[in-house]
Image 1: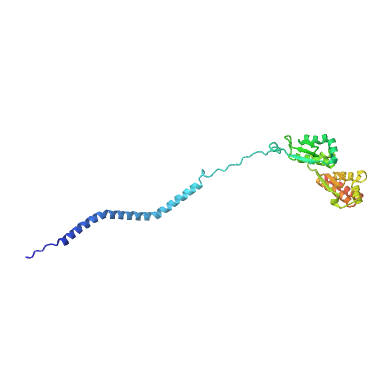
Image 2: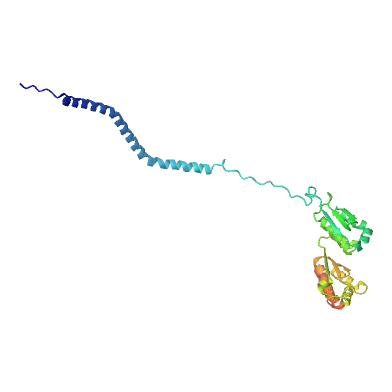
Length: 277
């Protein structure tokens, strides 16, 4: 009789292996289910992402549009304040007073002392300037004040004093204060032609004429005032009138006879009368 003993190692191993495999399957099963669920969810997400992406971009675009068109973020345009125009003398009180010195030649110091009342009265009354005469420096000092209304008053006052210092009469120089289109023009005989000795004296005599007849004729025809100071000639008047008088004087300096100059002045004066009419 043969007795067969079962192999414990071989028989037990399969049982244990089956039990251990079953336990492992039981343990691994939840993880597998989770993985499966996660895979399924991932698949769902992967399937849904392409459809949801446009919605997010559209929302962003809408947000951008909302930000651009938001009236609260855009500043409202502010209108500039409107102020009335300031008068011409508005800044005179706040600005520092201006001073002008007009030099006076030595040979005109005595006449200016005699006519001082007639000189400073128009400057103070018409222009509202402050005036004083500095004897040591031999000049007339003019300064603006709170009563000065015109911006160009200082320049007008300086031109008035300069005209008197050049030799013009006070009544003629006052016209510079009352009218705006009057100017002073000065030149010398040598600027026109270089003359010496008797030739220079004869040129000055042709300009002045006998007893000043030629000079007065030029003044009346051109409506200007002329001063002959040795070789210097000063003319006061408007721009066009100064040109007429200067052309006549230049012709006399160059040697033209007075009769020819008178004829030219008659023609010019007749044209001026026609323009005035």
